[in-house]
Image (tube, one colour):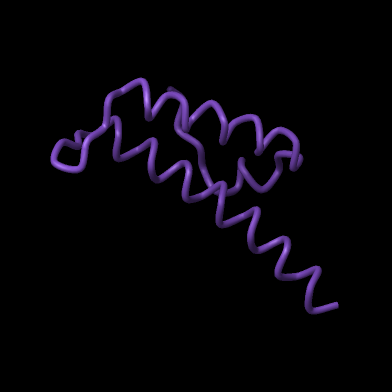
Length: 66
């Protein structure tokens, strides 16, 4: 599991981000995350997912305002 930085995620194409998001979600399910149990790995996966979603949503917001 590689660390995803915000700048690296911004450089990705939308197709690459969607594929990475799919992989991260699968990895999160594979880790067997429950509401009561989190560790450093699951925390970092959740952060990476949120970074990708933030970038995807910010791009859509910019298109709506134009």
